[in-house]
Structure formats: structure tokens, C-alpha cells
Image (cartoon, rainbow over the protein chains, first blue to last red):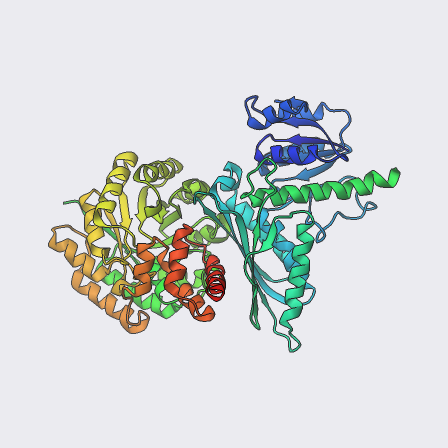
Length: 293
Length: 337
């Protein structure tokens, strides 16, 4: 599949490195705005075509299957208006929330009969790191309230994250509501500037309706299965402590260590979104390409 | 001498001291008494401000809205203030609610190196025509020059004054004056200081701040507040008067407010417990004392050891989620010894 990356910041560059290792995908363009951006230099060194004219560079392409937008929420709205009538899939790495939320194995791509071309929103690091666990537990418990608190290294929070911290919270709370069915959700983001940088971690608090047949081991099993599922696309996910289970609340802390492709491994917050995007690309590949082979 | 502006944060930082269990009636009574004594600003809310009631930090007894309405109804001349930390509080959900209720003074806070997370929030409050105080929390964790740079950002965003918090109660008077001087020279706006008493320096650090040019100080009735508490306001005010500073507060009437806190919600007030001292010495957020005590009890480990490890990890406010993890780690380490 032919893939273009729009936005040559850290996210886009990390995706480029990830995609360069995969035979199924061919990066046909990395489009940025500044010729001196580190991402464009990395792309040029790899022999990947680059453009400094942003979305216009993408629109000039003739054969494109997927556009990955790694710019900002405000820019994505404009970009989407430019490409929505073209026959291509869009992965939205910003919190613009135009398209369907995509969480690997939890909120997958809708059936092809409904939509030929998709805009998938990869939500937030907090949403990606917590949704699989919350979804798994929502299958065995009636969840009343979900809260997640994510700690990320200051160095891993770029200007867009910092300017859009409210949007981060709003988007994360909405996706938690969808995967949990809970009437109340809360997301908290804390930036820590410690040196050396801290590895991303998320604590999930799940308040559930007590049931007579409540078995802590069932919950533990479900958590472990869910973590293994996440490790399938983010190998660096692990439980950081033994889950704390009372008759009303489950507290789970997990660490998300990134793959260290372009982004340093402490920024698991960025890596998990990119890993989910790769997962989405494979879903699209299986749906659109493999069936025709 | 220039008049100082004292903010009474009993009903906000004090909430930490009582696990955020303020009732509407406590707020109403205290606000009436504070106003009678001439306190210029009363700050109200969860210990970590708007939107902070949570499993992570602790749930408030009543909603932010109920707290602010109770205060608003009982403050006429005295301004109503709030504390808001981006990452916990959002513009649409929390700041707008506070604006609708009629909050006068907004403190927009971040960890001392993360000022750029406050830009949109400060702009939002300023656009609504309200004063926005840029607050740098856990300020002992950054060099004075860094604090100056961060404060300048907040002023660029529209902050009308700057306040640094000694959230861990880690400063000595010289640390305070050095930082206040830098902030004063770098920003050109009024500068404030918020003390914690972990090392017994609450009042002394405030005096050091004003001598260095600060004009805004915080205090709490009975010294209530996170950890070892804040500077005790009914002590701070007469001490300032003795030094010849004006506060506009009647120091005798202020005692009535302190007594109301005493008899309604302050309990015995905070002391410099062993843990608060360890928290101050290790530069860990004062608000961690209660959850650390709970985790130490739950896992049978030494609370002091938890604090030392948290200090080693350089945790910031809002990282309460690390406490249980550290307790489990200590338990495991102890059992393998």
C-alpha cells in the first residue's frame, strides 16, 4: 500500500522508521512545511520523496492509498476537507475526532460494506493505553466510573500536546465512555520533567457495581490477557504493580515503554499511538489488498 | 509601605488537610467571617483546585459547583478565587463553570517547568475580563533562572501577576528571596509566594519573600493545608503588621475566622509530623502525606521510605499513582532481603 506522511515532526518521523521495516507498505512522500525540519532530513537520507508544501504536496500524488496526518487538530480539519472526496484512507494522529475512533482489537475498522474509505482517529496516548483493559473488564463487570491518570515525560510532550491539553482530556474521556459504558469518566495528564526522563505510565481506576459472584482471580486473568493482547503491537507494555482489587475498585498501573524507533523509548505515549496506527494499516491491508491477491 | 495582598487559601489548600471533606456550611460560615475581617481574597475548592476531585488525588465531599456557590453567596467585598491546573481542569468544563458562578480571581497553575500548558487557560480567563495569576508549583525543583523564564511565558500569555509555591515546604528563607528577586526583575508584574511549613519556615519564608519584593502572600486558618500546612494566616497577618506592612485585614476579627475553622472543620490543625518533615527534606509534594500513610499501612512498609523513594524519583504534584507502586516495590525488596 502507498502511504504518505503529512507532518515531519517526531510522530511522523517515527512512523516513517516503523513503516520502512514493513514490506507491505511503501512510503511515497513525507510532507512538511520547513525544509530544515529533522524529519524531512531523515526521510531524504532514506531516499524517501519529501515536500515542503504540506497538504499540497500530498494532493499532487497520483497513487496514494493512505494518508497519515501527523499535524494538529486544527490543521487536520482543513486537510480532511481537501482529501475527503478522494479515494484514500486517512489515519488521523491528532485529536480532531472527525473520523471513527480506532483502538486495536477493541474499536476496529467498521465493515467495508458501510464505508469504502475511512478516516480513523487514533485518539490519545491515555486512550490507547487504557481502552483495551477497560474494554476487557467491561465484559465481566458493570463499570460505574473510569478514571485514568497518565504520567508522561515533559520531553515527550510537544507543543501540540501542550496547547491541546483540554482536547486531550475531552477526547480521552469520550473514548473511555464508549469502551466502558460508564456514565462517568475522567482523564488526567501529568507532565514530569525529571532527568533522566520518566517512561510513560497510566493508572486506571475502575469503580464497578459489586456482584455476589465477584472473583478477583477472574479480573486478574482478564487483565493479563488484555496486556498480552497489547504486547502484540506494543511489546513494551507491562503491569508496573500488582493490580489492587477491592470489592468496588480496581487499580491498575501499566508502563508503556516505546520501541525506540525514532522516538526515545521513554516516550511510550507517542509510540503507542504510532503502534496502533501500524495496526490499523495492517487491518486496512488485510481488508483491501490481501482479499484481492 | 506598600499594601500587601493576602489570599486566604484555607478553603482550598486547607482541603488537603481534611481530605477534601469541606461542607457547604463550612464554606459559608468561614467566608462570612473572613469577609468580616477584611481578607481581600478567599480561595475555594479541592486541594488541587478545579476538576481535581478524583480517585487519584481524593474525592471532594461536594462538587466544585456547590463549593463555589456556597462561597459566592457569602462573599460581597472579598473576592472569590480558584486554583486550576491544566491536565486536571479544562476551560470548557471547569473554568467556564467558575466564570458562570462569578469567580473573580483565577490562579492558573503548572509544575514549575511546564508553564506553556497554561497558555490557553490564562488567555481564556483574561478574555472573560478576570485577573489571572500564573502559578508555578513545586518551585524548588527548578533553578531561579528557569522560574524566571517560565514566569515570563505566563506573563506573555496574559497573567496579571506571578506566584511561586513551595509545594513541598522545602525552602529556607534565602532560597525564597533569591527566587522572588529573579521573578520580580524578570517579569515586571506583582510577585507572590505560597509557603508550606514542613521545615517550620512558613512565616519566616513569607517575610523573606516580601523583603525581596513580593506583594502577595497566602495563609490558612490554623495553618491548615497539605502536609505540615501553610503559613498560619492569623499569625502571619499580625506579624506583618508588627513589621509595619499594611494588609487591610483586622487581625482581631481574623481570629474569629480561625476559630470558626477550628470548631467546624479544621480539627486539631496540622503539625509538622515526621512524615511532613521527611516530605519537605526530600522535596516531595506536601499533599502526599495522607496517601503515603494509607499505602504504608496497607503494605506494612515504612512511610518514610516511601517518601525517600518518591523524592529520588522526582515526582511532581498529581503523581499520587506512584505511591502504591513504590509501596509494593518496597514490600518486595523487604521480603527478598
